[in-house]
Image 1 (cartoon, chains in turn orange, blue):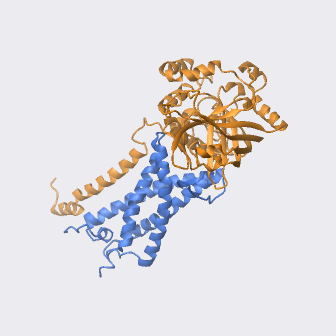
Image 2 (cartoon, rainbow over the protein chains, first blue to last red):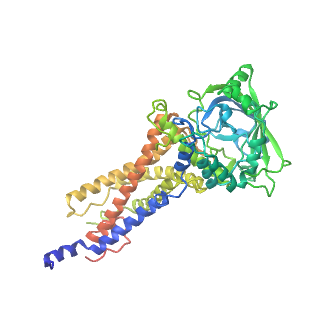
Image 3 (cartoon, rainbow over the protein chains, first blue to last red):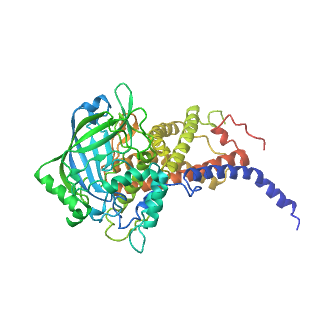
Length: 363
Length: 183
């Protein structure tokens, strides 16, 4: 049916060509926004996906950190001896005493896991300077990290997901991961052969990732650091730790602190010119220059549920002026992943016990 | 109508276009940084905070300029509902421009993060550390960011509607260098 002249005039008044221009402009802007937000790239590894995968390794981590989920808070001091001030202008490295809020944990996705199930142990610290600057660091008792990239880390976490039938990871998936990732060999060697101890206090904890220290002249040096135990390591075994009970490490820490403070030395290792600073799977040669910059004095321990570390995100990129992150992709991915885990558990506070939330819930 | 009343002042126009670029950058950076674990995250988050605080300062100047100089009147033949939509969307834009950086600042405070701007420059916390407050503010920051993006799309669509369909000089009050096309 032919359109009447009045209809044609109405259509012309609407100016479809110009409306199309407006629609196109808006669609391009909205589409670019969707692209930036990752909605058009479902394969992008988002913090959400990493933390979802970390949340599915058995147990119920709701209300808790999604990795290193079982831990205990501590408070104490960092006594800087001033030796670090020549390497970095960070205020917490100038000679003096600074308050520390920290946390010991085992690497698990299950906040109720028995201590003997955690091969890897960690120490997280927040050192506060009077000028409001902070140094947060999460360190592990392993010499190297198992993987060098976020993609490999994500793959590893997926392989470690608990099967609904057994509550344990699929051994085939773990084997397949190991076969595809020879870079994990050094870590695996450590996991097989390093002695188990029955105390957080007998372990040394390493930054693993590299950072840059900037001195007063603006010179940047690549560094890694370690909290070196001052107690000798009494080699034990996984079975012996299991016999001591599911919370043996926390009980040991509390018992030791009743007798007096525990100490670690913060030792900074300076990279050689060709040492890898973007690959945490590779150790640096043992003869690199090391500087003892101060002593961590751990004075008191507190249950995590009510302790001062509960609501701290030990984001390793919270750094004082004078310390910068390296370009290590694992280090730079820790920050967004920790932030996602932090945001979830803060939202879940108080409802963890009620069963209202599930580990995979968005928040 | 004199030249002054059918255009925004040069300072208002400058602030508008500068902030338009900055706000779009903020929204794209924000939505990008929360969805990536790539090394870009650190660069994006390091830009997001100082850029947000700069926008807070700029919106204060802008509100003061708006209060001092007002805005050119809308065309008299504009239908009442478009007039209402213009008013509502501008109130929403000003409110969101002011609220977003304040909520971001408060959110970082409630999370117990140091609020690093640049180098040693840090802002003091404006709230005590609190899980409930952090959760509320984090959700508000995200939801209002999407709302702000939607209002900006609406604003852009309306500006183009005035420029291309109505051809009534409303776009030229903010962009006087654009020639007004013949009807």
